[in-house]
Image (tube, rainbow, N blue to C red; front, side):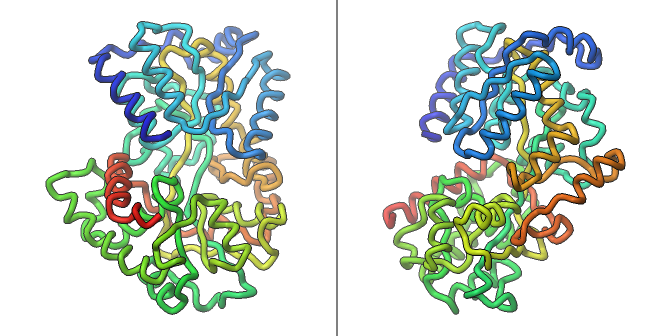
Length: 409
């Protein structure tokens, strides 16, 4: 699905040529006018629909927006964000520069880069002009201002954070034997053959593991901040695939098969087939314990030197039909109230993008009183963030991975 969507986007874009970006009609700094214009609008929020708790959170958002602003927020549930991008691409190709079918998109990474490069987003600066931007933690979360190394330039508003964290069952695995980096993880796997694996790319979690390894083994991590250089690509990724060749020999099923996705990997931890797994949400383990999907002895750890992290955002297409309503929704999503509920593992457990130091005292106290869960590391123990590489690396690494290993699936 993802590959097909990318091909669709590329083919349509090829026929568009270069078109000028339409400026936002509304003055975002005139907030009373935005609120007035939004009354009665319906915001079609295109967002991944594969999680019941996230869908429930968005139902709460919709209820709040109706009560506060008389704005209807309708979630368009997606399997792949690229399908929403393809809608906007097709509308632009057809000359539908107003009244578009997509008002707000949950987005980051390659999809953001694609929309930015093709002039498919509302004019720069709207996000940084939102009233609640004053609370955003731009000082300590650098991925808010650069999405997969691409400057955001106020074209998208941050919604939540993500950080790679590892899980293990403390009833089976000694805490003192846990690895501190991917080199030690390989050594651990050799001592514990068959007890580690990762989802097969292009699964997002599996591809994230490859990027974590690449950052640690590459001779020049700074190169990852720029686009892939095809003339040096083979040499650049040789250490990654040398690592994977060694890892697969001692992985689950000797690297001849891989978990399908994170839920499959999680089930294998629960069943005792794997001893170490990982996710991109620090609250995931506690949520799974609470849901009875993992035992209460599950705990989390991370690498002291850092693990991959990013920020996910919402963006407004240039031709959105309900621009004012979309702006109000984006602003509400970064309000202390909405961010507090989102970080509460009872509802979602997604890390906040707000700075505790910038919040009013009552809001700061509310965040500090959250019970994150027995298997969730405190924010101060998550370690440094390793920024995502340029979006072009994901496609090339996934393609090369399939060429080398897909026949083993």
